[in-house]
Image (cartoon, rainbow, N blue to C red):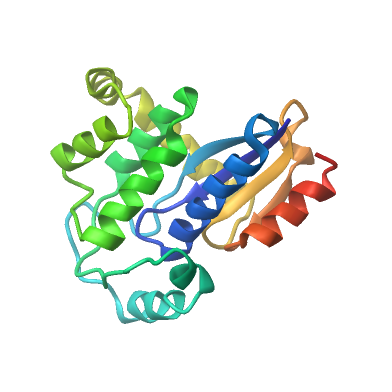
Length: 202
């Protein structure tokens, strides 16, 4: 089985696109591919802030990617950037249930298509519930602090691998050492990612 570990941020449009591609990869390869969500915050803040000019320029450039038209995405220009730690912890919680991609996609949709505040606990819980997550168990896990430890470890591992941007991925045989995994930085289309998977003789 091929495992794809993906680091992504909920305010990064290219991470959004990568999540959509990974959904398609999962549908194509089904149980031959396992996708594991890893956390990284591009702009760690504790309050809402206005997007920088560089962020907005990057956003406008991202809107030109073919996937936007192909998927009919009506991207809304973000009015603010916010605290995404809760969203990251929630998607990490969904990994063992096989719901991380579904929840991540719903959170991306909420931020980029509906301009919802994904730092708001009630917003995240509603989205999690609609994605099939048991919110009582999720709240317990959040309150325990265990998810925070895992997310912090993910961010440290991102730095250890020397990734320079998001999205970032490690791809390889699930039962092999992570050191044998192929590191990939930057958004990859379905065709590009499929070619990488095929090169691993899946």
